[in-house]
Image (tube, rainbow, N blue to C red; front, side, top):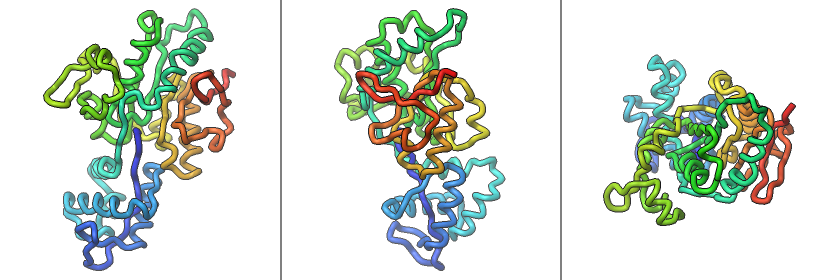
Length: 303
């Protein structure tokens, strides 16, 4: 996420007013100024439909930081001397992540039946690098853990190959939850009893925790896909990227930038899996479209 990044626009304060959300009223002018700032930092925009949500979350940060106007808070963000800690707090409260295990399972079938066999077959014998799969954004971890479980259950060569799974998100709070690997009944509702018994331990009523060996096998790290400097660290690093239901929250420019960042992060011949309502063909011509029996995916050319 995701799965979903919720960001938005602020409004500035109409002098000393109170909003329906409970707290300071935010004017249209300040809303637009804040939106521009947040967009430049994250590439994400929310419209009026999220206004109530945005106002409430902003007022939480006003209260936490002791700012009495949106203008003073925005200035604080721009010249923050806490090394970006407040911006990270703001990103955390502005994101909503809703996902579950085995979501859009058809892409996992495509992974084990088509993508991994093709990647393995195309590798030169001397290439001893691990196969690397990136879940971006990973939200609270259901997707990267699903990838691991699905391969363990359905990919015969999983024990023979060296496969790394990385989960990343812009929200550090959900990353902490992903590392803890603790889920409720809703998150695991589509898993069989046998799968739950093998990969989870119960932790109180309606609580399921990923077993220690599986939790330690996945790396979680904070990543902002629209931060070009940050993304340079991941150049040619991955064979497969799962980036599902993120690009729908970007505008056209941010989508193109994200597509270019994923292109650079992939090794030649690597694949991108998007959400069912997303299409790379409408965003970028960098990738080729591949139609496999289970799913459409997008591929970086081999040369």
